[in-house]
Image (cartoon, rainbow, N blue to C red):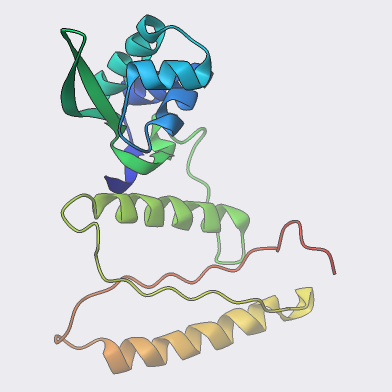
Length: 185
């Protein structure tokens, strides 16, 4: 099972974005038959089978085994990924390109879309790709945002210079600062 499946085709999004199919997909985090899923959802096996087949056609579910039950061969299905990301390209950029600076939300959104696409491109051959992650919380007064950005740029430039040689495994480095959401003081 993949960690993430990046959905960049409308047919995949259409197959996924139906509440009943999302319920089916969640239950297929572990291998199950349509009969087992149907019992959990209080639906008929035929109805669940219909949804599983649509999900399978879109590449969101795979048949992982078969078993014989009362003379009938029953498929065992499992979700192909633990997480499904919808590509922003499914809708595309609305309106023209807007010039953005590093202090704008639009710039951050563009950056996040690029990171999302880059991470999705790592699948499936490098599902266990080495990575480095760090997160923290800072406070920056509005009148010091540019100063903070300048300090951060200087510090990162020093790291780029120190680790920018031709030896070692190449990494992309992205630093994002955005307002904290939903935290009580």
